[in-house]
Image 1 (tube, one colour):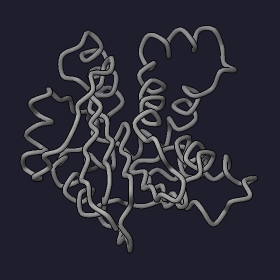
Image 2 (cartoon, one colour):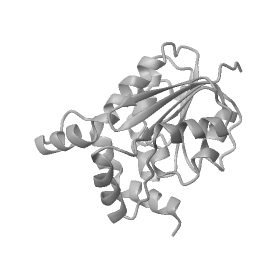
Image 3 (spheres, rainbow, N blue to C red):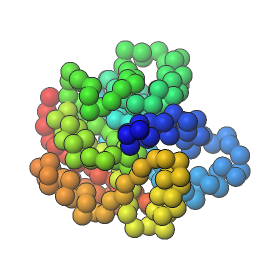
Image 4 (cartoon, rainbow, N blue to C red):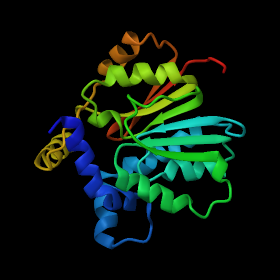
Length: 219
């Protein structure tokens, strides 16, 4: 089984547990665990919408969209079109369950598929990749495709190589058969150099670095 298949299998099984990070109505023990180990998931959600000041009339591609929590917020904030893609069908099933009652059905689309193989017909004002680069064996290839599809900003998270959580997470995911990759700031800068991305900000956020790359192009 390839590393990609192992990651897919992991998220097929963990979709509901992962999604509860965004919920307030959960057990006290879950709240404690999420606060200690997964608070960054909520923090980077908040940071994303701080960095995207205007969404009305804009288009968004969410790579590794998971259960679609960002899509719901993009719809609320007036984005014209949101496309979410994820290779775990259990995540896409959750995403579709959350948006089924929304009236603006023409404004969003969820795709269960492989980002690198999927033929997107358009460019996007914003491309999001939260919790994606953690699991990529060839991150530069993914960033190159994102650059080809982006006409505005790419916002992505990269787990830090040196934090006290790193070995815990490495062991936990390894036991689950899921590969995980960590980054230094210099690793991210090399990826940007390889892809000739010069305008960017790297935000230090708890266990993650958050990249905001501004391509400054127009559709």
